Length: 93
Image (cartoon, rainbow, N blue to C red):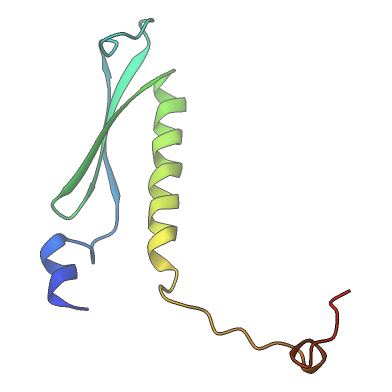
């Protein structure tokens, strides 16, 4: 792990910090709004979502799961090896 990753907190997983009832964001209608917070080291994501407590909490839980899954995939190029017939210029069927 490089110094840049540890300074930016990239080595830390995303975590759900809170989901709490709040007023509707400016320009939004309705009364069932929640504010959520997700952190990853020193980084912070704050968002708003309408719904009920259980639904919004599940939505944020899945978002955190997907964010962490994206971090596990290896970065970089993929080396593709073509079949001999394709390398020779044969048409792909």
